[in-house]
Length: 177
Image 1 (spheres, rainbow, N blue to C red):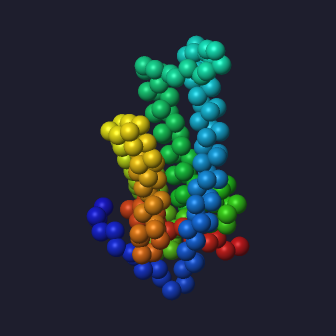
Image 2 (cartoon, one colour):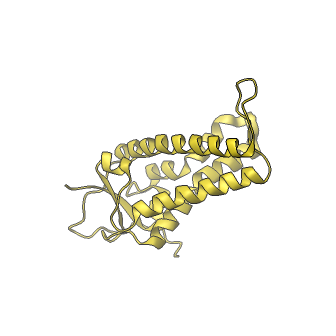
């Protein structure tokens, strides 16, 4: 993969790029589904592992079961997105917000592009976690900016692309009926 992050020109007949706020709205919509999924998976793993609620507080899983849970979440969420990003399919949030993910040339997204996009989406959360671990609560607001680095990138990008779209050579466009 090339490290060149220069804007890729759209072909003349390509669908219009979706606006930033519409893409942010779809992101929040997607995040709500993912939070519900994470809670269900956490409940299942806690039940299977024998962990329980103590004084009304959920217990944080530790040890091998925690590693298994996080690996399962990472892989299953990745499989969900990759499945819906390839071959012209769309997630429910993208359908609701009338968005479609396409490759930079306007075609369908390949499996390789979808996997790269999913992995690149984790750049911001990884930076946020690393920043929080380094700074702790001394500068608690700064790690939030790192957490959303992929999305903040769009404010500096000439084409208003998110970082993960720039890396994967994909674009979020308005879906035409």
